[in-house]
Image 1 (cartoon, helix red, strand yellow):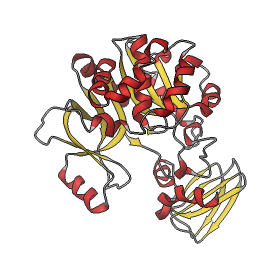
Image 2 (cartoon, rainbow, N blue to C red):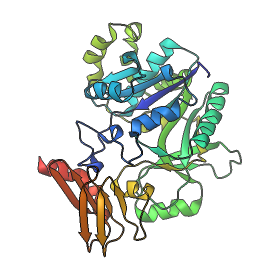
Image 3 (cartoon, rainbow, N blue to C red):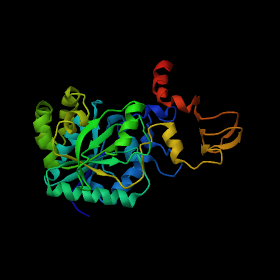
Image 4 (cartoon, rainbow, N blue to C red):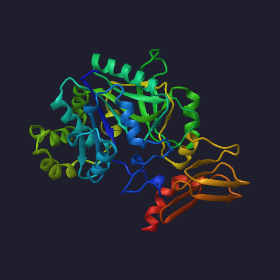
Length: 351
């Protein structure tokens, strides 16, 4: 394996649209959402370690999830877990981890990947990642993997690439926010838009140069601690300084400003598993399009539902169509799948 290959595994999200299974105390990346026998973070770590040395995979997460990671990934050492004392979006944590990697290996190339996505064709994922690494070793490029849209989805951001670029790796024109349905249909018809999966590849030199150019204050803020990174003095510096960093995403901070941004249309199946509906898409289904995880069910006059309970719980459903039915501890959720984006707001109402 190439010792210059590194990964930053993003594992700090809460996954609130998967409530009541995903909670602030135990988010979705630490659950076996598909009943596959592995949690999402375990599956992602395994996939990345097919091309990246295990010891070169850093896991970015909130400090409250440290013990969960050590429990689920026993091969990971404490020094591979990069702890955020406060939630500050993706740009500060990526800069922080990139500076740590620079100190380990200034010739590093890295992938930044979410820990909670589902990728079926792992051979194609590794092949796409290898192509991206090869480019980023040769050129000063900021790369992302884009997903070929299968529908005018309004839940994803989009990447517009140059229609006239005949190369397999395309020049990015711009990143687009989550569109309304009319705009999403127009994107699909244009045939030069991809879903933004939040997977980025670059050399440590390229990304730090971009931070220095486009986010000079943030860069200077984190560079103050460069001498103590990867030492016993690092935690004290981070505890004091990290909460003062700007709350901004890597897309806004860097990708929308840089001119050397490229996208490779991915050749693997992908699902961000962001909602119960997206999970329903990936699960096996019966003749009436019902998906079941763990439960023992009797479904009558019911279709297009997803049912998830503790292992072996008996569930009887009659006359429901397109519903989410989730039983978790003291909470029972029965909710229309068409309103799944609103689940996030229910939590604040209950509080």
